[in-house]
Structures are given as structure tokens and as C-alpha cells.
Length: 457
Ligand code: GLN
Image 1: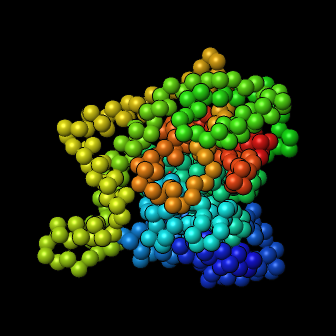
Image 2: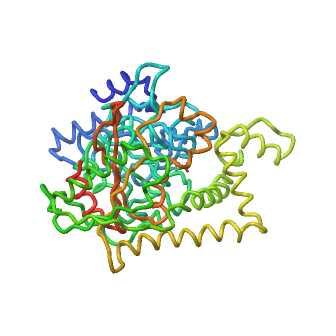
Image 3: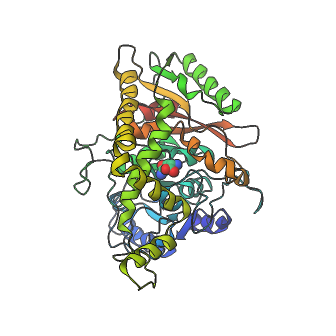
């Protein structure tokens, strides 16, 4: 009840596309019966959650914040959602996002932008929530739920977590099933977790991770639940500081915070050293090409025939396709489809797509080398974002729109390599907004990653 109340009180923040009050009420009745009559307790009993609106929820609209799916009601549940419900969690609502998870601000949604609760001074003066899982981050930071599910293709869970001052976990690719997550880039998408602290995020991860027959890319090995230890020993832990992450445009306050935490870890006897990930600078360009190619192919299913928006254009099938797609998608989606199809033309395929795939391999190899080479480190410490949360007006200005991809500079390489990463809120900036740092680790290193994150938080 308190969470539903909070969701309503904070409706100006626009975190939710849909507050699922009836689902929450039915859930409360069921769990009360189970609790008092059958005396059965589940691990997430009493835990309220929000789910990003690009995860399918049976009988509950799943819009991807797009005109194309405004009225789409799935007939099945995403595995992540099914597992959370089975563990006793209670759905409060579906959260806002950039259309089809394309963006870094939650500013491009048909339901309007999500506002950051930090620095909110009414309709005209507010900070962006980050994105594309901004609704999930604000749902947690405003107290409307205990944890939320986002998706992370290039940073979409960690970026809003960082700007909203909550924890954001991007698990190893394949550790958590993507079944029912409407795809952006299939080879990089992972469900992500947003929570108030590392303990809560770990509880959620323990409930949603593991192999799934419905997603052939899940890691087949049985999942060992993560255990968080009190006062995890940091002595002799090797932590790398990748020099390439000191990038142009990074705010001084962010760099200070990075240095400060590195010193604190050193005081705890961790071994800090500078490492190099030489292909970092090409990562954004490579990501854009791969993203746009996969978008061009993934979006082909929205043709106005099977499901989604169908316009009244009945002159010809081609006209129907064209009008449904031009009315159903926003500019960002349409321009990515356009660019992707260009890169995939026979004459460009090798020059762009294949080259991008090769570079992706080199980016992944960089991580392999720092985690497994002669001078190896256990984890990497970097900023999550280049600054604290920008003002909405600045973020959507023409110049920054062109620079939008830069927002993912620190987060997106982890998706290229499939490795796990976590964003941890550290302290407040001079403008009283959250500043966060990121830890990255080798594949399947969640146990270590989250224990160290817990020491930092
Ligand atoms: N900002 C990136 C994009 O627009 C990443 C989005 C995401 O992780 N879903 O594609």
C-alpha cells in the first residue's frame, strides 16, 4: 500500500507507464492467504518491484514506450518476471523507458520523459533520470518499490542507476534469461537490476539467474547463488584503473571521486594499478554500427500485419507497411533502421558490419588480456557516467543530441565483451546530485564483483 501511495504521490516524475494496482492487490490477497493459512514463505515475500516496459507481462500491456506497441498485450510472461512472481515479489507497475530502449536519458517515450527525483524543482527545472531504464531507476529512488528490472545493452541499467543514486547491476551475458525481453541488440542485451543497495540487488539476482530452456543463449551451468560476506577482505585484491577511461569531457568531480575511492581501496590493502584497454576509443562507433544493424533486422517484425499498430492505409501492402512504420516509430528508431539497412547493403556489409564485428572481438580481447594476461587484475574500477545528471533542456539540445552516444562511453564496452558490471552510488556532487562509480569483472565473477561493490557502497 505504501509503495502504491508513493507511486501516486510521485506521479509527476513519470516513472511508470502503468501502475498495476489491481495486480498488486490480487497479489497481496494471495500472499496473505499463503502466509497466514498455509504458513508458506517465499524469498521475495513483501518485495515490491517495477518492470521496465520492454519485458512481456501476460495480460498487462507492454508498450516499449512506442506508438507501435501502445495497445500490445502479451500472451506470455518474460522469464525474469515469471521468476520474480514465483519468488513472491509483487508488481507495482511497468516503468518508463526510451522507445524500444534506444537512448540514454528516458526522454524519448510516447508517455513523456521521466524526471529524476534528485534536483526536482517542479515542471521547469529538473534533471534527466538517465536511460533507457530511467523509469526503473526513479521507481526505486523515489521509494515506489524496493527493486526494479531494467535492460542493459550499452549501459541502460547502469547509466540511470548512476544518475539516480541507486545500485545498477549488469550481469554476465547469458546469466539471466532474455526470454520475453523485447530485443534491441540480441548479442548484448541483458536484464539488469536496480535496487537501493547491493544486498537487495543480490537477492533479486539470486532469484532471476540461471539456465532457461526458453533462451538458448543462457549459460547452461547451474547457478550458484551469490553470498555477500560482511567485511569482505580486500587485501591483495588487484584492481585495475584503465587509463583510456579518463576521456575527454569527463567532469573533474567524477575524476576526483574515482581517485578518492581508489585511495580508499588502497588503504584497505588492495593493489591498485593502471592498465590499458587500447580499443576503448573505437567502442562507441563499433557499438553504433552493430546496434543499428541489429535494430534494422529486429524491427522488421513490426509490419502492421501480425501485431502492433496497423494504420488504415489499404491502397497496397507496401503502403500499409510504410504508413504503420512511419506512424509507429519515433525519429530515433526510424533513423537507426535507416542507418542499419545502409550498413547491411551488399556493398557496405564488409566495410562496416564485418569490420565492426572484428573490432568488437578486439575490444573483448582487451578485457580478456587484463583479466587473464601476465599482469592480470581481478576487477576494474571506472566512473559510470561522465558527469552528474544533466538538466533536461541541456540534454535534449541539438549539440548534446549529436553527442548522445558519448553517455555510454564507460558502460558500453562491458556489453561488447559480455562481462558483468555494477554501478555504485558514491557521494553527492556540488549540485547535490549522485556521483557513481563502476566495477567490472571477468565473465561470471558476480560473487567477487558484488562483494567488493558492497565494501565500496
Ligand atoms: N544508449 C544506448 C543506445 O541508445 C544503450 C541503450 C541500452 O542499453 N538499452 O542504444
